[in-house]
Image (cartoon, rainbow, N blue to C red):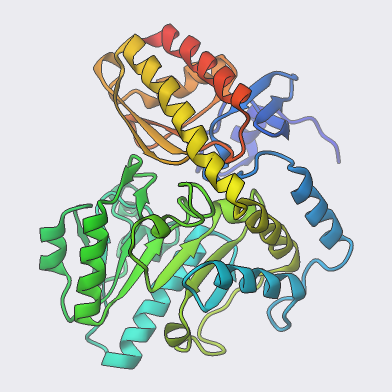
Length: 401
């Protein structure tokens, strides 16, 4: 069937959990995208920090095509070569000894939270089960992860929610000290809150979280679904903080657009997951693993990671100039190529209006809440695409500012 479809088709046949843009992308190359009418867009959204190497990167195409001609799926009743190579490289490049693969960031966080509860139960008994998370955090869309996430708008319609989950203000050391005790099994933190407004954790806050977890026998989980795989200029954001977690979750950029998630941890913690305690049918399938392996190989190259910092500086300079020109950015924040522009003045709380104006000028951007325009472009975006995209953003702001 090759029936013609349009944006109106979405409203007719899709469950309305999203309200997508008014155009349908049909082709991409690098940081450029074309819609059904052949109109070109500059992509500063990156599939929400997913397309680490842009669209249709030739090395990823080759990896996928090669694996597609060999083996697609065997389930976890059997293992496969690509997933073993991927796990070997991830453990070589990080603190971790073991990897568990799934299909998304939510699933990776689900596995991490279940593992933390299991470790605490095995080591200390049933009373040690409280999970401490941050207000305004985001950890996924399963019932468990929306409950742990600190945004009521994602969980309030699905009560009763899982119990023994507490939230503290992000970057508030005193609040964290009051909450973490001997009943705590885990503290989960995003090194940068993405959905929460692109807000970075204070290194002192992360260090205190590490110390409190050590003091009370709790596990420290870093949710690096959005910050991982080069997004901040190091392979994982924890590498810039001096703080090493017990469990790390990764997804988004890991697959470069192909669905995959990972939970990384140590031998001593991983041994609490034994055959049958957790699982996934598709997780770590040969196709996803082959693509993710190539992504990891490319992103971990020193020149690619160094290039993230160079591109960050170019973006910040351009955004600062636009902020000065229109007086509409209260703050430009973030690390590497995860950037947030907080709006002020007549555009305060109007990130959606900026998105629509940008769309009209052929630019794809994101928002992080109602008041922050978020950018998460490809880690290898070309300078000319940065400059052209900023010029289009200039025209979009001129429309509404």
